[in-house]
Length: 158
Length: 158
DNA sequence: TGTTAGTTAGCATGACTTGCAAATTAGAAA
DNA sequence: TTTCTAATTTGCAAGTCATGCTAACTAACA
Image 1: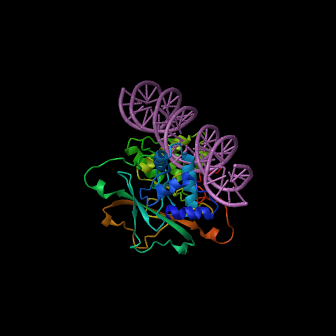
Image 2: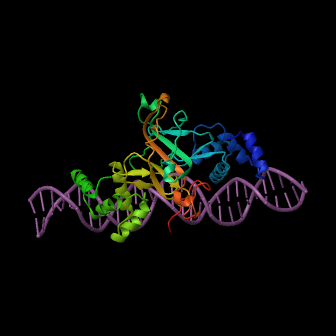
Image 3: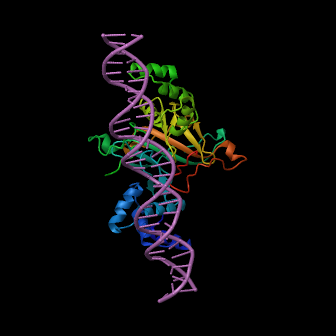
């Protein structure tokens, strides 16, 4: 995703208003590698701008995604994650602590769908699951992002 | 997933009851390549067994998944899909008609997460998106499994 | 400063899934 | 075959995540 300043420019060009809410989100997202959910962004945003609406967070995130400034990451359980890193990369989800890390497998031969099957692939989503380095050694469970038990694990940070 | 007969055996061995509801689902899932949702299975099951509960469908699907007889497929939008095909394979989702096809990219070099990063990868989920052969040639939109517009596209068959 | 189209806030609603408790029932024992 | 009991099924309430809708608000331009 572009810098807050650049985004401001883009918005202006598109006749979109540069509201304080949007600017705040631009800042919160810039260089953010935590793959936040709308909820977590809402919590952080609320501290700097009490009263901001979760609806607005969703709204703005949706707009940014549509403008290709933001990537939606679906790790299968819980809420959608947002990733300002638009470069081609994949994600690793730690089943133990729930953390999401960017992974770059461009080193490996590019993935290609069997075009022989007549599919026109436009997008490839890859999600690795396992245990991250920290969880792998030493302390076991932490947040525990369940997956196997149920179909869903919509656990809140609570 | 195993055959309904084999599953019956497994269930018996585990002291699990072989109810008509379960047997019906075993049959509906066996060799089912449609990647159904719990809802769609419910609709089909209801015809053969009016009064069966959607809750039971979810319950049984969850059990089978836990028993590794069934794979949960999350294509990002809408409901979870269930896939009795437990062999290593990936999925292609047609953004036009919403169909899900199994894809086998074992021919391509296996995916490997950067173990250098200290990640212990246990599972890799790959979802290809694009247009399937049929949609690619001729008729455009059909069911239209939206994705880009919003974060979610929980459209029901209704 | 006034105008207005684009935004925000809040609440209602919708889609999907799970929790819970009462009613049933498969399967083993008598 | 009847009895017994723990496993299941149901049905509904509740929970999570996300979107629709609209009145109130405001950034941005004349």
